[in-house]
Image 1 (cartoon, rainbow, N blue to C red):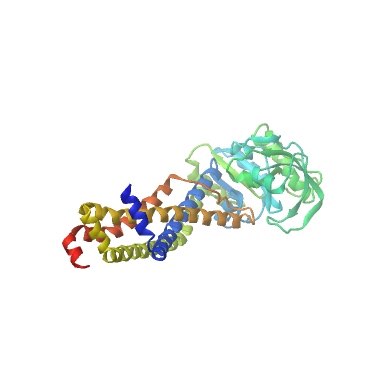
Image 2: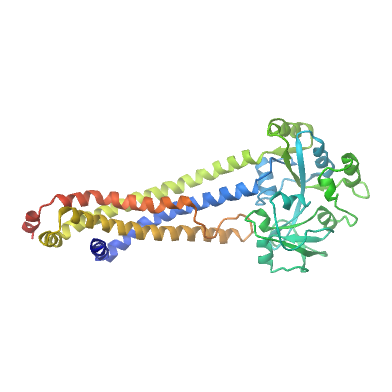
Length: 417
């Protein structure tokens, strides 16, 4: 304990040099903490939001755009597809379920999603208040959306055209809140859910009715359902934005996308494939930041080494006095190692706080469009690498100065006085 106390005193006997070393090391550790936290939160978000979705079927265009818009809700969709074509997918022998989704409107940046009850059930969502919609223009709010909008059961609002804030308001169609979901940590927290008929009515089809929750489970005559609900009263085909598909067997991943891409007017995108591509693209940027963090850590290690080596030379008198008072050489070396230990611990704590602050700031910035679920104080097990790295760098830089202090005899120390 005395060695630790002496080491703390010696570390801050030169406050400017100590603060510079701590700052350099903390910046590198903060960058690494930021990378670990963002990677952890993105992986968690992808794992939750992609659960149970084997394919996304929508308009032809960019497959990644389909995934980003239909699953993660961070992009605009490539277009609409006929409802009848989506309903026909239920007859495919390899398809277990099809969940239609209609996009196009939002409220204060939160997306209004027309769908069926199967969509919240896909994420095993639970209601905190109220019930799911059973009529057009009834909505169920995700937990984050409800909190940000300040909405309660019975609240009414108008949707705006477009998937971001600032669009034209649909003032003649008022949505009524009938339910609020419990927080789930999934994409549902940031969405406003309603029936497909709500989207059709808001966009000029006042006689639209939902295809029916029973149709979503493929009960009854599917061909008749597609004919009855796939067109408007005046004969124009109804459309949805895309559909989320689950397979009956993993083997469907080989043949089903090819069937959709070649035999229909739609395209099928595999979430696992597109997310892997996205993470690879993001990895190019993280490699640069990781290299920058490595340079900072190397600079910090060099600075710690120089500071401790200089400390050995400047404190020869103190070291001689300690040796004369009976301190063995190992105690002198331990003093320098403990000083480096203190420096690493302080820098690790500061680096963790900096990294958490960077992620929180990123999450706050991204909440301007209520898009990506990044932010908040989380402590994954991977963060244990940060203090371990801090101690490794600081103690590694102190080994040579400590060895030098260990080998110098008390006679030589006194002769230098």
